[in-house]
Amino acid sequence: MATEPLDQFADRTAELRDLRDANMRLAQQLFKAKQRNERLIEAAHEGAYDAMIALGRVQPVKPAKPGRVGDGSPEVAMWIMGDWQLGKKTVDYNSQIARDRALRFAEKAVKITGMQRAARPVDHCVITFGGDMVEGACFQFPSQPFEIDSTIFDQYVATARLLADVVRLALSTYSTVEVVAEWGNHGRIGSKRDSLPRSDNVDRMCFALAREILGTQDRLVWEDGEDDIQRVEIGNYRALLIHGDEIGRGGFASPMTIVRHADRWASGAYPWAFTDVLIHHYHQHQEWGMANGRGHVYMTGSLESSNRYARDTMAASAEPSQRLHFIDPVRGRVTASYQIYVGD
Image (tube, rainbow, N blue to C red; front, top):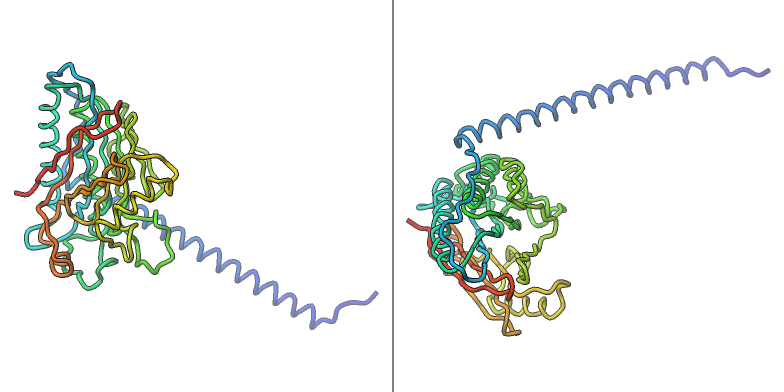
């Protein structure tokens, strides 16, 4: 019976030894990588916890106080909020001012709801968050690193806390609250050229953390929306919630282009019947009627002020504001619309 030459046997033995050594090295590298990732995750949790503690104790949700109620047909309040750009720094805007203005809007919305309740019940509230809740960190405007006052991590925690605090105020006013949340271009991770899913977005991360902060609330519905166009449904009322960078070349379009786009969607290009389109991104409070004579495109302002980019490139500026609507859920239409100024 033939046997292998000793030199071939020695070569195979050396090859097996090399493979075993390589396997051990890979196992050690995998173990170290796992340890490093676990340390990073632990550090992120600790950092989020410490940052949350620095913002103060999260207060429990207070029970709703309906107050005096008229005998008219019920309506639903809709808080339309977006373009907070928390983390932005200008001569008269920063993260603290953003927080103050968001809560100022909520307090004014509560007061106006009290006035509305003199005529009819308003027990339900829908809050739409329209994106650009964070400023981001130089992915969008690499030449402007001096215009932020906090890192992405700090923006993530502070914005999530503010989102949760706004929802808490709504829960203390209305019997039930629903949140519909859309993300914006400032929350994008990486540049437009990077091959990353649009849904990987810091705004969306903030929404997820805010839901965790609030915990399980029987009176709250807040589901994650994976699409980049969100649907708002209040009885027979339907609206699309978009950020606004979806339309136009490079994320900018003229008002009439936006309206024509919405008209095409309403004519069947978008596979869901709707009445209105809620849009942000442009930091302006505007309203245009759609071709069907029923729906509207509602554009909402921003919390920020002194936007140097908008001033210099588009000669555009506006007073900081957000929107408050009241909806007739039976007739499926907006019955009252308010521009809520939130500046000092």
